[in-house]
Image 1 (cartoon, helix red, strand yellow):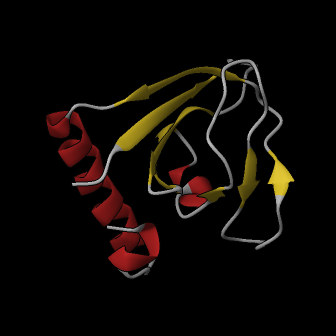
Image 2 (spheres, helix red, strand yellow):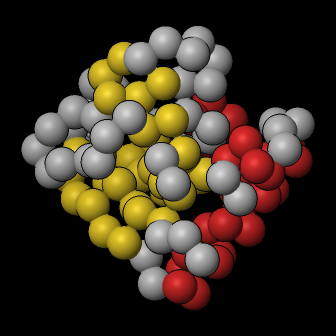
Length: 103
């Protein structure tokens, strides 16, 4: 099983504060906007206090997300399995193959 990381962003009033990333792809986003961010590629490892470079599914163009990283943690196997199930649900809702999310 691949590692899943939870990237928490500084809350600047945006609709999301967490990305769940598996093998460089966002598989879940909380609490809102999963339909926007799931499938986004994270270009490099997230670093606390920095912006992350991403390639959104919608545009396919690299850009920096304008919210700084507050924390990064690797989920336990049980937590990762739960988030991967959410990722599979997103794949179905967005009409993506699970492989597009590295699932």
